[in-house]
Structures are given as structure tokens and as C-alpha cells.
Image 1: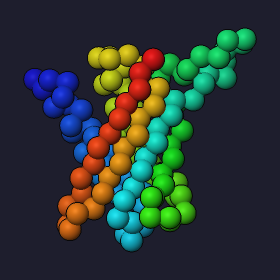
Image 2 (image 1 turned 135 degrees about the horizontal axis):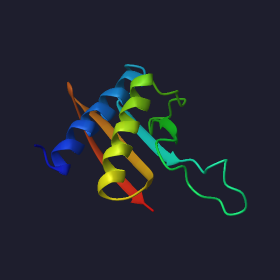
Image 3 (image 1 turned 60 degrees about the horizontal axis):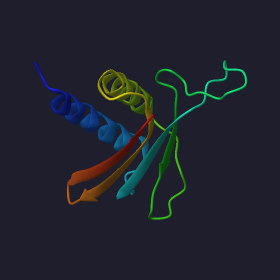
Image 4 (image 1 turned 180 degrees about the vertical axis):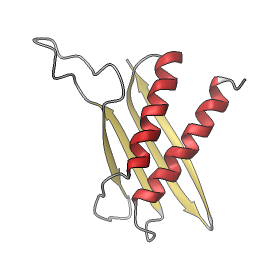
Length: 114
């Protein structure tokens, strides 16, 4: 059985692959900002959606116009949220920065939890 880090590494790889699928080939840097949306069902005090409801923003520090995510990015986000919610609590925000280096891509990610 895989531990949390191994599971997340596989999901992170799927997320970065989906980021690359979502953007034009000319992009050499991609920033994905995931922000959990507030629940529309709550009255009075805003609360965060319980599961899987994120705003996806794909941009590039190279000045390219933002693009919309591919369906595979939504699926990978849902899987990441499911894993982290079970292990660390509600993910509020995640920022992935992917950079192309030759034929390969590297990435880093920062997470905020509730």
C-alpha cells in the first residue's frame, strides 16, 4: 500500500500533466491557482464547500493570456482534494508552478488548509 506522499506524488504528476494539456505548446511556464469556492447553500456565515469545488486559474508569468482548464485538470483536482481532505483537512488554496526544462517539466506546489 502506498503512503500519503507516494499517493500525492502520483496525483501531482497527473495535475501537472493536465496543466500542460490545458495550455498551448508555446508556454514554458504555467501557474495553476486552485481556490476553494464558498458554499452558496450557507446563510449568514460563509463557509467553504465541503468537497471538490475549486476555482481553477491557469496563467503564465511569460505574459500569455489565461486559458481554461481541460477536463482532466478538474478530475485531478477532485482526486487531490479527496486525498488531502482525508489526511490533512480541507484544502483552501493550492498553487502549482510548472516550468519546462528541455523536454521535461519540473514543478513546485504550495498548499493552504483550513
